Amino acid sequence: MTKQAKSPAHNLSELKTRLGELLPDFAAAYPERDEACEFPHQEIKALKEAGFMKLTVPEKLGGFGATAAGSIAITQQIAEAFPSLAQVLAVHSAMVSTLIEFGSPEQVANVLSRVVNDDLFIGNATSEKGSNRVHTFETVFEDTEDGVSINGRKFFTTGSPAADLLLVFGRHHDTLGVAITPADAQGITIQNN
View 1 (cartoon, rainbow, N blue to C red):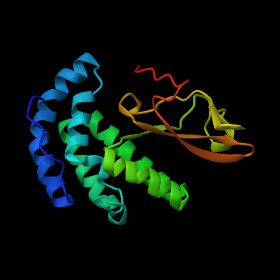
View 2 (view 1 turned 90 degrees about the vertical axis):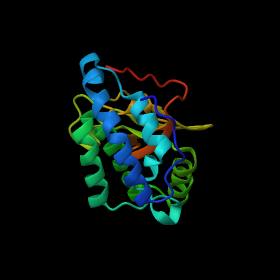
View 3 (view 1 turned 45 degrees about the horizontal axis):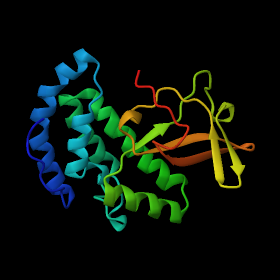
């Protein structure tokens, strides 16, 4: 992936055009990355530079407002060229939707404006080994003088090696909680295995 980066797309139509330009490079890179078990850092960077992090962010918040069907169609095109890259993009889109569903209006506006303006990728930190229902999460959120402390261990956190932010699920007292934290926050260790 040595092509010169272009300016990001300004709308969904331009984004689809950019996708058509990127797909041949993704398809060429996939066999080598897959064989070497390499994380697709360069391809995610290309998606970010093209504006793909805005794909499912609502237009009123500066995104492209792709519908679920539109997002799935784009993800499917990427999957045909580079399956694991498509999975990473699908996680980001799902985390945007989760934030919209569960976040306060202020949280949604704050985080998604950063996604739009800074091309941030939201990864997930949801699954835990041995937890098959949300009320069995071992990850807990504890109130501190400085805010909230997150304590836990997550498993199957697709895309986290490229994440700028992590959406973390856990328990706050006896209720389900969702927290957003920088992926490089003190105390977070991401094992790319």
